[in-house]
Length: 234
Image (cartoon, rainbow, N blue to C red; front, side, top):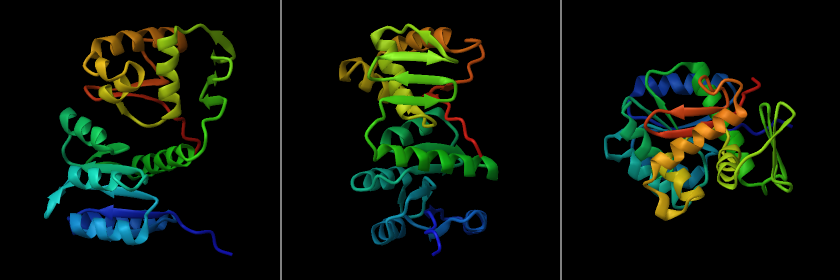
């Protein structure tokens, strides 16, 4: 019996790019659906329920951000934005609207495939109760004991540092915006206190990174937010 292929909805109005994505994804075992407009995207997403969506922001009949918000109203499929817009503000707006990742054109095939794998892993974890022990690279978090070990060594974290690290670990590989992190860790009243976040991220890096000046686990997306590196075995 043939294993079902992961269904990817590619939403892109430029035909050459769409053909390139179709050929690339199909050659790596994905089932590809294609849409050139926002209207067609919603129709195909409703009819076929894809496992993941690759979405261009500049569509002829609508804004990709509006499509993202509409999909997020009923679908949990990861959305990776593919866009020529490389400004920090565009990335923040897309992630806050509900996108899971943002890849700026032009991009390499290897990076695109890695981002797909990470987004699909994250989606698979999202439907399962959080395990009592999280492993991300050299990091181990025992949520039952509220213990953190790095390379086997116990690390003492304050309650806020712990909540911050757990949030990033449960979303490993996904960039969380400053606003998303502040809302989760400090609550709505702290949503504008980005300086708090910078201070606590610096504290965390000093405690869990080999070299806090060259972090390998806690990654910064300048002007956008942070992520905990999800080491890709492939």
